[in-house]
Length: 167
Ligand SMILES: Cc1cc2nc3c(=O)[nH]c(=O)nc-3n(C[C@H](O)[C@H](O)[C@H](O)COP(=O)(O)O)c2cc1C
Image (tube, rainbow, N blue to C red; front, top):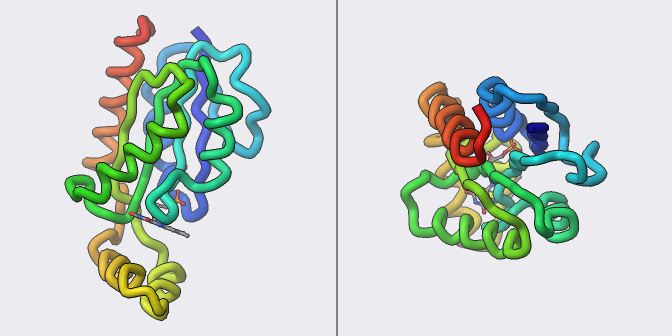
Protein backbone atom coordinates (compact mmCIF):
# COMPACT_ATOMS: atom_id res chain seq x y z
CA UNK A 1 0.00 0.00 0.00
CA UNK A 2 1.44 3.38 -1.03
CA UNK A 3 0.18 6.47 0.77
CA UNK A 4 0.57 10.17 0.13
CA UNK A 5 0.11 12.91 2.72
CA UNK A 6 -0.20 16.29 0.98
CA UNK A 7 -0.94 19.62 2.59
CA UNK A 8 -1.55 23.24 1.86
CA UNK A 9 -0.54 25.47 4.77
CA UNK A 10 0.06 29.21 4.87
CA UNK A 11 0.87 29.59 8.56
CA UNK A 12 1.89 26.04 9.54
CA UNK A 13 -1.23 24.71 11.30
CA UNK A 14 -2.29 22.24 8.63
CA UNK A 15 1.32 21.18 8.15
CA UNK A 16 1.53 20.17 11.82
CA UNK A 17 -1.59 18.03 11.44
CA UNK A 18 -0.11 16.51 8.27
CA UNK A 19 3.05 15.51 10.13
CA UNK A 20 1.05 13.95 12.98
CA UNK A 21 -0.92 11.87 10.46
CA UNK A 22 2.22 10.90 8.51
CA UNK A 23 3.92 9.64 11.69
CA UNK A 24 1.12 7.11 12.22
CA UNK A 25 1.24 5.47 8.82
CA UNK A 26 2.85 2.08 8.69
CA UNK A 27 3.16 1.68 4.94
CA UNK A 28 5.18 3.01 2.05
CA UNK A 29 4.56 6.74 2.44
CA UNK A 30 5.42 10.24 1.23
CA UNK A 31 4.66 13.69 2.60
CA UNK A 32 4.80 16.88 0.53
CA UNK A 33 3.19 20.26 -0.04
CA UNK A 34 0.16 20.05 -2.31
CA UNK A 35 1.86 22.40 -4.77
CA UNK A 36 4.42 19.64 -5.47
CA UNK A 37 1.81 16.98 -6.25
CA UNK A 38 1.13 16.60 -9.94
CA UNK A 39 -1.28 13.73 -9.73
CA UNK A 40 -2.60 11.05 -7.38
CA UNK A 41 -1.75 8.26 -9.82
CA UNK A 42 0.26 5.50 -8.20
CA UNK A 43 -1.05 6.08 -4.66
CA UNK A 44 -3.56 3.71 -3.05
CA UNK A 45 -4.68 6.38 -0.60
CA UNK A 46 -4.06 10.11 -0.19
CA UNK A 47 -4.52 12.18 2.96
CA UNK A 48 -5.06 15.75 1.74
CA UNK A 49 -5.12 18.70 4.11
CA UNK A 50 -5.82 22.42 3.78
CA UNK A 51 -7.13 25.42 5.70
CA UNK A 52 -10.63 26.86 5.42
CA UNK A 53 -10.66 30.26 3.72
CA UNK A 54 -13.93 32.19 3.63
CA UNK A 55 -15.96 29.11 4.67
CA UNK A 56 -14.52 26.97 1.85
CA UNK A 57 -11.45 24.88 1.11
CA UNK A 58 -8.57 27.27 0.30
CA UNK A 59 -8.78 27.94 -3.46
CA UNK A 60 -5.71 25.92 -4.48
CA UNK A 61 -6.96 22.86 -2.58
CA UNK A 62 -10.47 23.17 -4.00
CA UNK A 63 -9.10 23.28 -7.55
CA UNK A 64 -6.81 20.31 -6.86
CA UNK A 65 -9.58 18.14 -5.40
CA UNK A 66 -12.05 18.90 -8.17
CA UNK A 67 -9.54 18.31 -10.90
CA UNK A 68 -7.38 15.48 -9.57
CA UNK A 69 -9.54 13.79 -6.94
CA UNK A 70 -11.98 12.05 -9.27
CA UNK A 71 -12.23 8.35 -8.46
CA UNK A 72 -9.33 8.53 -5.98
CA UNK A 73 -9.37 7.22 -2.43
CA UNK A 74 -8.99 10.36 -0.32
CA UNK A 75 -9.05 11.17 3.39
CA UNK A 76 -9.33 14.88 4.08
CA UNK A 77 -8.04 16.90 7.04
CA UNK A 78 -8.92 20.52 7.55
CA UNK A 79 -8.01 23.32 9.94
CA UNK A 80 -10.10 26.40 10.67
CA UNK A 81 -10.15 29.13 13.27
CA UNK A 82 -13.76 28.55 14.37
CA UNK A 83 -14.33 26.08 17.22
CA UNK A 84 -15.12 22.53 16.05
CA UNK A 85 -18.63 22.41 17.50
CA UNK A 86 -20.11 25.45 15.73
CA UNK A 87 -22.92 25.30 13.17
CA UNK A 88 -20.72 27.22 10.72
CA UNK A 89 -17.99 24.58 11.03
CA UNK A 90 -20.46 21.94 9.87
CA UNK A 91 -21.11 24.16 6.86
CA UNK A 92 -17.36 24.28 6.09
CA UNK A 93 -17.28 20.49 6.02
CA UNK A 94 -20.29 20.35 3.71
CA UNK A 95 -18.45 22.74 1.38
CA UNK A 96 -15.45 20.40 1.46
CA UNK A 97 -17.63 17.38 0.64
CA UNK A 98 -19.12 19.24 -2.30
CA UNK A 99 -15.77 19.42 -4.09
CA UNK A 100 -15.11 15.74 -3.36
CA UNK A 101 -18.34 14.37 -4.76
CA UNK A 102 -16.53 12.43 -7.49
CA UNK A 103 -13.78 11.13 -5.18
CA UNK A 104 -13.92 8.05 -2.98
CA UNK A 105 -13.95 9.96 0.32
CA UNK A 106 -12.85 7.59 3.09
CA UNK A 107 -12.65 10.00 6.02
CA UNK A 108 -12.73 13.57 7.15
CA UNK A 109 -11.00 15.23 10.10
CA UNK A 110 -11.15 18.84 11.19
CA UNK A 111 -9.71 20.87 14.02
CA UNK A 112 -9.12 24.39 15.13
CA UNK A 113 -5.94 26.17 14.04
CA UNK A 114 -4.50 29.42 15.28
CA UNK A 115 -5.62 32.55 13.46
CA UNK A 116 -2.44 34.42 12.52
CA UNK A 117 -2.05 37.91 14.00
CA UNK A 118 -1.80 39.51 10.55
CA UNK A 119 -5.19 38.02 9.60
CA UNK A 120 -6.79 39.12 12.89
CA UNK A 121 -5.68 42.69 12.21
CA UNK A 122 -7.00 42.59 8.66
CA UNK A 123 -10.39 41.22 9.70
CA UNK A 124 -10.73 43.63 12.63
CA UNK A 125 -10.43 46.57 10.21
CA UNK A 126 -12.96 45.20 7.72
CA UNK A 127 -16.21 47.02 6.87
CA UNK A 128 -17.97 43.68 6.94
CA UNK A 129 -19.43 43.00 10.43
CA UNK A 130 -19.08 39.22 9.90
CA UNK A 131 -15.35 39.66 9.34
CA UNK A 132 -15.02 41.78 12.49
CA UNK A 133 -16.99 39.18 14.44
CA UNK A 134 -14.72 36.49 13.06
CA UNK A 135 -11.60 38.39 14.22
CA UNK A 136 -12.90 37.93 17.79
CA UNK A 137 -12.10 34.20 17.54
CA UNK A 138 -8.44 35.16 17.28
CA UNK A 139 -7.34 35.14 20.92
CA UNK A 140 -9.22 31.85 21.54
CA UNK A 141 -7.26 30.06 18.85
CA UNK A 142 -3.77 30.63 20.30
CA UNK A 143 -1.57 27.55 20.25
CA UNK A 144 -3.92 25.45 18.10
CA UNK A 145 -3.68 22.73 17.00
CA UNK A 146 -2.56 21.73 20.50
CA UNK A 147 -1.38 18.27 21.55
CA UNK A 148 -4.92 17.00 22.22
CA UNK A 149 -5.97 17.95 18.69
CA UNK A 150 -2.84 16.38 17.19
CA UNK A 151 -3.65 13.21 19.12
CA UNK A 152 -7.12 13.17 17.56
CA UNK A 153 -5.47 13.57 14.14
CA UNK A 154 -3.25 10.55 14.89
CA UNK A 155 -6.31 8.50 15.91
CA UNK A 156 -8.02 9.57 12.67
CA UNK A 157 -5.02 8.34 10.65
CA UNK A 158 -5.05 4.97 12.42
CA UNK A 159 -8.81 4.58 11.88
CA UNK A 160 -8.58 5.37 8.17
CA UNK A 161 -5.71 2.90 7.81
CA UNK A 162 -7.71 0.15 9.55
CA UNK A 163 -10.77 0.83 7.42
CA UNK A 164 -8.75 0.88 4.21
CA UNK A 165 -7.14 -2.45 5.01
CA UNK A 166 -3.75 -1.05 5.98
CA UNK A 167 -1.84 -1.62 9.23
C1 LIG B 1 -7.82 34.47 3.95
C2 LIG B 1 -8.23 33.61 5.14
C3 LIG B 1 -9.58 33.29 5.31
C4 LIG B 1 -9.97 32.51 6.40
N1 LIG B 1 -11.30 32.17 6.54
C5 LIG B 1 -11.69 31.38 7.58
C6 LIG B 1 -13.06 31.00 7.73
O1 LIG B 1 -13.94 31.33 6.94
N2 LIG B 1 -13.38 30.25 8.82
C7 LIG B 1 -12.46 29.84 9.74
O2 LIG B 1 -12.82 29.17 10.72
N3 LIG B 1 -11.13 30.16 9.59
C8 LIG B 1 -10.74 30.92 8.54
N4 LIG B 1 -9.42 31.25 8.40
C9 LIG B 1 -8.45 30.76 9.38
C10 LIG B 1 -7.67 29.54 8.90
O3 LIG B 1 -8.51 28.58 8.33
C11 LIG B 1 -6.93 28.89 10.09
O4 LIG B 1 -6.15 29.83 10.76
C12 LIG B 1 -6.10 27.71 9.59
O5 LIG B 1 -5.72 26.90 10.70
C13 LIG B 1 -4.83 28.16 8.86
O6 LIG B 1 -4.10 27.03 8.48
P1 LIG B 1 -2.59 27.10 7.95
O7 LIG B 1 -1.76 27.61 9.10
O8 LIG B 1 -2.28 25.70 7.61
O9 LIG B 1 -2.59 28.03 6.78
C14 LIG B 1 -9.01 32.04 7.33
C15 LIG B 1 -7.64 32.37 7.14
C16 LIG B 1 -7.27 33.15 6.05
C17 LIG B 1 -5.81 33.45 5.86
